[in-house]
Image (tube, rainbow, N blue to C red; front, side):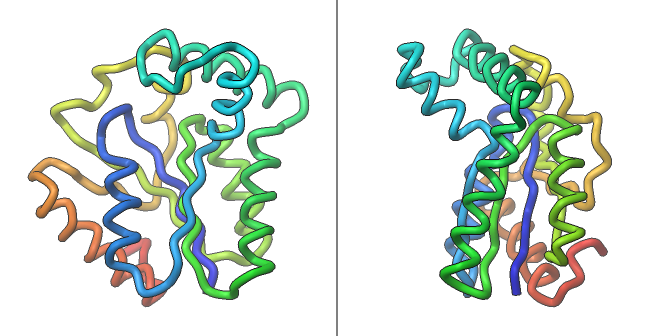
Length: 178
């Protein structure tokens, strides 16, 4: 079974932690990709970006992504290319894609729904940091999408692991949107 998880949340809420824990508990392979990964490499190679999650760096990446999306839809194409390369190797996997922009999330939902994948959009919520870092329009748009699941990360790593484990059980049973 092929699962696509589109993950969003404000900076520092635990998106990477979600994927790390999911990787730890999953019985099928997990692959991760962020819609900003390719843009980040361009910024490193061409702009001297140091892969630092500060306000200036976040603004640079968001701006480059916006330009490349408008020019040739490159971030979306890179997401699909990675998934296609995974699909040629194995039949059962979970592909976690981090993406912030509601219009990009919708594009992925439309594409992967048409392709027949099990798809779930997820917003990670952590009340003590939600919305505290808003360095660009991508960060500001986090709440502008209606997600299939909202997963809270408010009680520490062990509590978050329980939330993720419960979600994983539903995902494997095909009931993730309950």
